[in-house]
Length: 85
Image 1 (tube, rainbow, N blue to C red):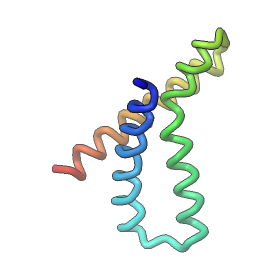
Image 2: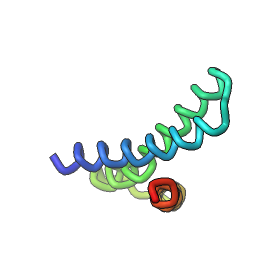
Image 3: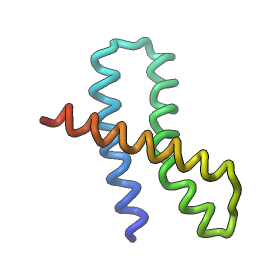
């Protein structure tokens, strides 16, 4: 249950920031689809290292994936606060 709530909150956070950014850029449909795929990837990046470590997979690549995922999470959190207020 926690995992579902966590994914839902991440999706709302990333979706709101993405909507604000994409609406101001006036992108064509092909660029918007690429942006949505990139946004969905960034949404899942903070969760993937947790799932891999839960299944017993450890590597230096996973540490780099964690760095990218948590950095993007921080960016979207700060952007959410900036756009919301």
